Image (cartoon, rainbow, N blue to C red; front, side, top):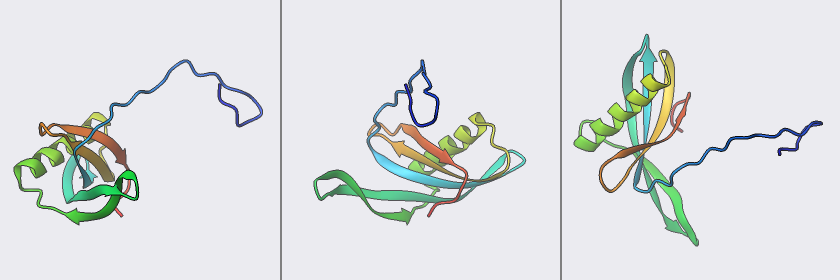
Length: 113
């Protein structure tokens, strides 16, 4: 039960997410009439610090024309297709696990930073 307004609401569903570990990327994409163009591919530099399992230290632009870069960008564009995104800019975050498999983290309608 959720309280926060004058009336309480009961929800009968729950969302469960799998923990994804690996290298995290952000893909900035511009879409026009369903055609997607990658504007930038970023890699997050996350490391343990101050007792936390990871802290964001930096982001760096990386080459999208590598095996991993192409896989991440293609996966991000497939996510936009699945969400029926046709127009505008988007920021999609993807984690590539130890097997090289991409996992969707989130999609936002904005650019990085």
